[in-house]
Figure 1 (cartoon, rainbow, N blue to C red):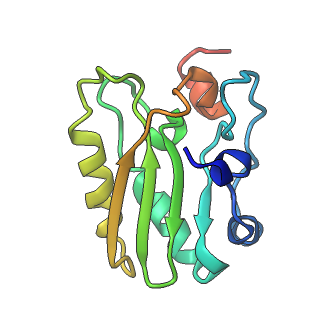
Figure 2 (cartoon, rainbow, N blue to C red; figure 1 turned 180 degrees about the vertical axis):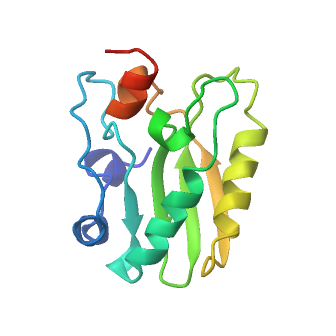
Figure 3 (tube, rainbow, N blue to C red; figure 1 turned 90 degrees about the horizontal axis):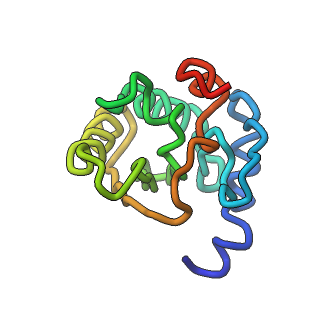
Length: 149
């Protein structure tokens, strides 16, 4: 992980995009290992197209983990979504564990769903393991539905 990202994973463009897209604020994270918000966020380069970013997030929310009855966004498997002004999308996601039986299918499904969004010109999905996923990364809704409260 490069030093710039580890110090501040959110660019000024992300901050501007966050202000322009209506989403619930991230839930507080109790685990010090979870440096990312419990609810995933979207970085939109130069805040050019927040509506496209919202459509991309909506598409990602249609991908469900086959072992957990919840979409992968609410589970906290999506670490970053970067929507470029030219419609190119880069997704950084993780899995609940390196031995996840859906390790081959979930990234492909994310890529396919994102590329189906009007205005998206391409999508790269990278599976990352840092930080390690923990249940604290789930949204409050996911924790409530799965009985983590």
